[in-house]
Image (cartoon, rainbow, N blue to C red):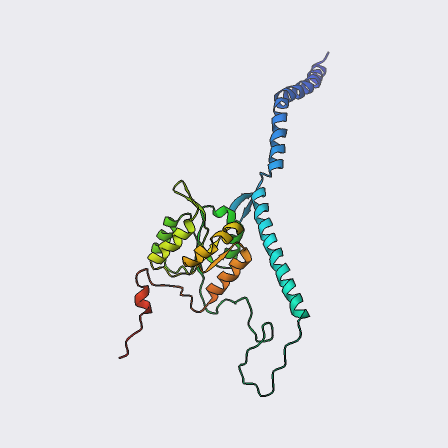
Length: 270
């Protein structure tokens, strides 16, 4: 037998041997790999990146579900109101010689609209968002940043007060009601923040953004403590922020805490 035939015979035996070795080494791990893949698919543990934050598909799906549900609710209300307006009798005509500046019916040309456009010439708006779990609000934070709003984050009441003491120009504050702070669950952390803001003479509007049950349960307490808006709806939140940030009265560079009373004191003539 020549050397070439010997090499060919060895090669023909080597391939099955290599395949057998690979199977012996890989097969024991196949069940665990398959189980892990099934578990990942069942729990949707794959991650996606939204606005710089990494979420599991399950978390992203839940946030999208909340947004879509809220949008559907608002659309249903608007459609119902539109139907009621269509069924209502037409308004009485304005009598000849009516004084200029008479009220214009909503929706008519030149009439008032619910949404306020951004004030012209106004710089970038800045808000403070207080939430111990900002990942649960990734979509809201991403939308605000896409709209050009600078969002400062704080995870506790103490951290929020520190941010406000160091950073000027915060025009509005968004806070949740329930937080875990210093390893302790606090069901009224948002109300505590409202009280501390009042004591520190921080006069920015505060929007309480929480789940529907807490919004209904603690709405009056939050309003009594100084909240401007209490809502669980992202659309209501965005609309309120748009009105507040586009208002000409919004001061982009408020005086430090403690000088608010001096700023409001009228100047003496002469």
